[in-house]
Structure formats: C-alpha cells, structure tokens
Length: 528
Ligand code: FAD
View 1: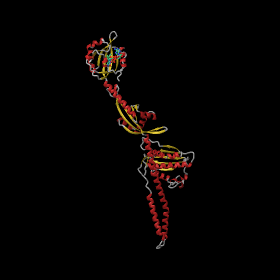
View 2 (view 1 turned 45 degrees about the vertical axis):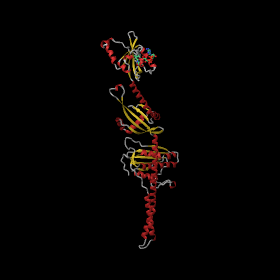
View 3 (view 1 turned 60 degrees about the vertical axis):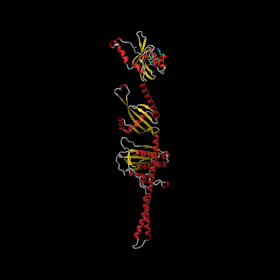
C-alpha cells in the first residue's frame, strides 16, 4: 500500500505575487490542463467545478457529464465509511489528505485511485475550494499484491518442506527459515547454519571459497555434529548462492548486488546409523570368516608339521633297514614299508593341498583410528558383558596432511589383528576377576611408525614366556579350554606381513601391555 503521512505544516494554496511576476497566471492553467495527474477543483461540498483532460481520461466522464456533479459520483461504495470520515475531518481542518479509494469509471469498471486533496483557503481564511489530484494505481497494487501472494506461497511451501531451509545474508545472519530449521535450533542450539557451514568449510578448505566466488552450488555435503551426552547427528547439506539487486533508492542508477546463501539441511542420522550397523555387521562377518580360514590354515599346517615327525622317523628306519640288508637278500617288510611311506606322503600332500590360501587383497592406506574404533564397536558386547572400563585414545590426526595417522595395509587383516589382541585382553581381565577391570587402547603417531598400545589389567604374561607366546600352538590355557594357541602367532604373522613389530612390554607393571608398531603410510613403508 502506498502510504504518505500528511504534512502538518503545509501552507494552504495562495497565489504568491512574486511567483506571478515571473510565471504568468495562464501558465498555471496550462500546467493543470496538461498534467498527467487527474486534477479536479471542487467547491467546499466537493461539487466539481473543473476537471482536466487527464481526469476525463482516467474516469471516462466527459467534461459536461461531470461538471456540477459531486466527487462521490466516482465512489464504488466499497471504500469504508471511516476513510471518508477521516478524509473530511482532515481537509476540513484545512490540512491536505492523501489516501487510496476504490473508484468506478463511467463504464462501471473499477480502479484504485491514489488521491491527494488540498484545501484552497481564501483571504478570509475560509476553505473556498478543494484541489483533488489522483492517479490510477491499480497496476502497482496488483503487482504489490502478486509479490505478496507469491511470498506467502513460497513461505508456506518452504515451511511445509521436510528439510530444514535457511536463507543467510553475507554476514551469515538468518533472513528466512522454516519450521524444520526452527526445530534444529531447538535440538542443536543457536545457530545450526553457522555450525554446519563451519564444518563444510573445514572439509573443503579453499574449494569452498572458490565455489562461493563462482556461485557453484554444493550438493550432499555430509556433516557430523557431535553432541554432549547424546548420539552424534548427521546432516546432508546443500548450499546455493545467489545475488539480488539492492532495492534501495541509492541503488536505482548504480545497481548494488547483495549475496545470499541458501542452505538446505536434511537429517540423515537414522540412515547413517543403519549404514553403520550394516558396515559393522559385514565387517564382523568378514573377520569371522577370515578367522575361520586362518584357524583352518594353522590347524592343517600344524597337523602336517606333526605328521612329518613320525613320517621322517619311518623314513629313517626304512633307510637303516635298507643299509643293513645283505646284498641279494630279501627284506620281507621292505615293500610294505615303502608302500606305507608312499601312502603317508600322499596323505601329507593331500593335507597340504587342503590348506586354504591366505586372503590377500589390495594394500591401501588404512586409518588406524578408524580400524581400532570399528574393532571396539565389534567388541562392545563382550566388553559390556565383562563390565570392563575402556579408555580409547585415538591418534591426533591432521586433516591437512593426507594419510597422517595411516599405515599401508590390509584393512581386514589389521582389524583381525586388533580384534584378536582385544579378545586376549578381555579374556585376561576375566581371568583375573579382580576389582580393576580396565582396558586402555591408544594409537600414537611416531616419526616413522604408528604405535598402538593395548593394555589390560589382567595377570600379565611371565617374563620368560614373553617371546614363547608368539609361537604357534603355544598356549598357557591348555587345549581343554579350547585354546589352540594360534591367536598371538596369527597376530605376529599379520604384523610381520605389514613390516611391523609386536611385543609385550616387560616393564609394564599393572597388567599386560602389548605394543604394535606399523610403518606409517606417509613414510613410504615397504610392505609385502
Ligand atoms: P457522503 O455522504 O458523501 O460522505 C460520507 C461521509 O463523509 C459523511 O458521513 C461525512 O462524515 C463525510 N462528508 C461528506 N461530505 C462532507 C462535507 N461536505 N463536509 C463534511 N463531511 C463530509 N470520493 C471518492 O469516492 N472518489 C474520489 O475520487 C473522490 N474525490 C474527491 C475529491 C475532492 C476534491 C473532494 C473534496 C472529495 C472527493 N471524494 C471522492 C469524496 C466524496 O466527495 C465523498 O465524500 C465520498 O465519495 C463519499 O460519498 P458518499 O456518498 O458515500 O458519502
């Protein structure tokens, strides 16, 4: 709506002598005649005494049809009575009035008139006439209303959207948001948009600024928001930039552009949780399959090793008998022994052929923090079941340095390695049954290697067995407790394949500390 406050101290119209000296009186008439504004002059009761051609064009009435009629002829009779009352009260106090009226043309069509009425005061100070000036603002009003309707429509659509939407200015102040965004403010505190944009900036580095400068939209940027005492939330964010021309008067001839950022935020925490559960389950399945194959390999290899002993003895006996045999004499058992030897070798070969291949896969940069936290997730049930307090200290990783905190290796093999070491620690703690039930896992970057400590509050390993425990089939528990003694042998095998070392810290006093050192990826470690 066009609103103009009525000036309080405007002097009523009088013909100034100084002006008539410089501008002849007929010019005033010509100005009114030729004005594009619809101008009328009425008596004090609003009876029309004069209208200019623009008035005739706007109202559709010819000069002689309208002269002598009241201005109310133009009223469409929908303008509230109060408007007229206010208008009259104002002009009667000899003050100009400005407002909007719904007018009706001669042909019955309506238009919105923006009208200014100025009282004309005579020399005695009485209102002798009124000067009316109006213009048809129907189109302006239509456009204003259309913009308003569109704004309302957009706001309703944005509000009904199932994703959070927020519009920010260059200073990242919120200009517009929807219900979902307001919910996010309730959940995450003020101001979620600033928090999420900071994470996206940190993820992208300079690429964010480049995208902003070129107005390249960003889609599906996943951001994790850590929350105190609550599960972390995941969001998929899309960022669009756009420019708007400043609507201020200053910018009419010198356009100023304003930049805005539209951020849409979709909560994908549930999806992430499901994906994570699927990932951990497949990792669990992969690791147990690997464990099974590894156990089978070691068992068959052990069986072959155990059978080789008696077979070698048998071969030695056969050789001895052969050497003692008189030339030309027949040794009755010789053929049977040879046959038994042959059969045994065949059985051994069959057993060797049954040993499954070690699954190798491709070597790749492996983030030890991720591997260890995955293995901890896999071990959650046993740790909780045993009431063990876990302290997990991941390595400080520098985002700016690619692969910092990584080693080159087989993710599954390394996962199995740490799973085995954690399982050993849990078992040791359970064995101790003492009040301290603690497991501490730390990953520490060293100049040329990544070091992982697994410390448990269990009974530890006697100094004399520190090296022996890594031998295949060595166990301190005994076969009766279903221990083959292959766990640490497998661990050492995996570590050796990665060019690293594993040992038991002899100086650790509060239980057992296993230390694994693996060459760092950035150090260009050589691995098989
Ligand atoms: P009215 O009976 O005319 O008046 C309604 C109310 O206005 C009354 O209750 C009364 O309080 C007040 N009123 C009316 N006349 C007087 C008066 N002489 N003295 C004191 N109070 C009064 N109206 C339009 O609809 N469109 C126009 O384009 C328009 N242009 C105008 C231009 C000028 C210069 C002037 C002076 C008036 C103009 N009017 C215009 C107002 C018009 O004269 C009517 O007052 C209005 O149209 C309402 O008419 P009505 O018949 O509904 O009610």
